[in-house]
Amino acid sequence: MFRKLLYSLLAIIFVAGVGIWIWWPENLVAKGPFLDFLTGKQAETPKPTEIQERFKLPEGFRIGIFAADVPHARMMRVTNTGDIVVTSMREGNVILLHKDADGDGQSDGRTTLFSGLNIPHGLALADGYIYVAETDRISRASFNAVERKAGQLEVIFRGLPPGGNHRTRTIGFGPGGKLYVTTGSSCNVCIEDHPYRATMLQMEADGSGAKVFATGLRNTVGFDWHPMTGKLYGTDNGRDLLGDETPNCELNLIEAEADYGWPYAYDDKIADPDFGEGNEERIASSRAPVHGFGAHRAPLGMRFLSGTTTPRGYENTALVALHGSWNSSKLVGYKVVALHFNADGTIEEQDFLTGFEENEDVIGRPVDIAQGPDGAIYISDDYAGVIYRVGWGEITVGEPQHKASDALAAEPFSDLSESVRVSLIESGRSLFQENGCASCHSKTDAPEGVQVKELKTLKARYNARAIAQLLDTPPGPMPSYAHLSEEDKKALAAYLLLSTDTQ
Image (cartoon, rainbow, N blue to C red; front, side, top):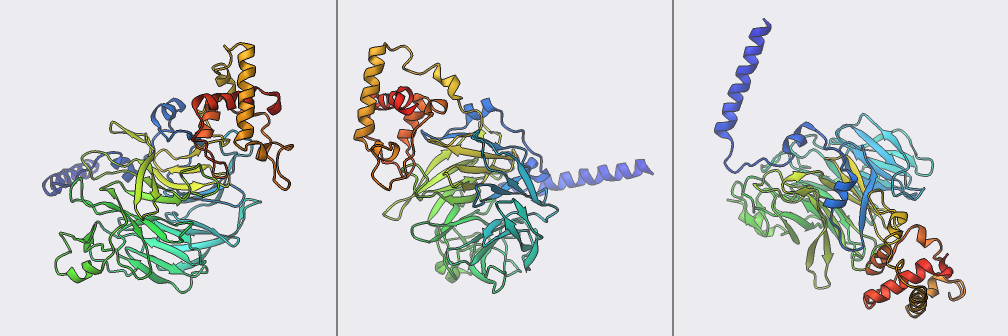
């Protein structure tokens, strides 16, 4: 009996394999960690040396692991106390990662707020509640951020179409207090039966008054409001099976009652080969994207950075996580990019964090972006189950950043004579005064009413290279130091690290 069952099973597998081989579309390419994605297999946590050697950031930034062993980490929100809430999607959990209070750049612990949920994904925090979007509903519970405690989840909105090719739901509160929800398509490209598919919904905070806000959005996972203009932007994943270069994954300016084309059109109102014919009028009235990421990049989470706790040049810049391709002959995406919104309305894309994929070797897939109250940037990775922390200036990150004690041995001052060191310190003291640093960091020089932040014990946390990086990418409140030469930076570092004024 068992042998017959085994033979039958093998026969079914053989027939299925032949069918797949015969009918597999010519342009369907499956590469990268595609099988791992289907099965839920996780990659190993990157080793410190791997992070140090592979990850690349703009000058002045550094990266470390804030929390590991967060399986299938997806969307994040930062509480008003600085903790990070993250969904562990496949496991059905919502986890609270405690903030770094001891200064080592890593989470100090964790609390599981909810478990046993049905594909929890989107999160929102508002008015003492935590909101969780599962594949078929939205719930909320009372939440005390200080005590790190949540009440029982109460369903506020049912009726989201569950499952499908795109089964995640993202939520967020807009400037007017409305709750927005995105629901991806059930397919690669098709005519949907459910009115909520491939749309963004808008509703009240209690789940009432739900209505379709925008349509034609194949799978908008990330969205955020520009902090200066208040305009709503969202990332959208383009369709597959049209080759390596077509169509673009999109950034859309999402407005009420607008149609963004799917499944009838893609890119700048180009008719879709499957459903474009006969829908020319609808295509003509659809909205084109404001930026194209390229095909198969799979943009997911996006976040506009704060204008006050962000290095100069990144104020009001959006960071977008490109999860990475599966239907491309060459792996693309697998990185975080920065979108700079120029005064003339153009959007410039630049690499921000690369190294998740190198020579077709994938060690991670970025999903979402969050920013802490101190300006630290958090990036979730659902393939390695990691939350990374990106810092600059005084923001510490977990290993593998250089310890101050290790770096001091390589300081550029150790081989200098005493007279040269004294001269360098005096030059740095003059630069400190000339550039207005004393007005914020010296009690004797600060104007009345200015809250002074004294620069004490810097030697325990910084070396000369780190000081130079801080001057290259100063946080928002600090002025620009682009006019300083390398010798000027060295002199300032000598003053800050060696002078008795700062000890």
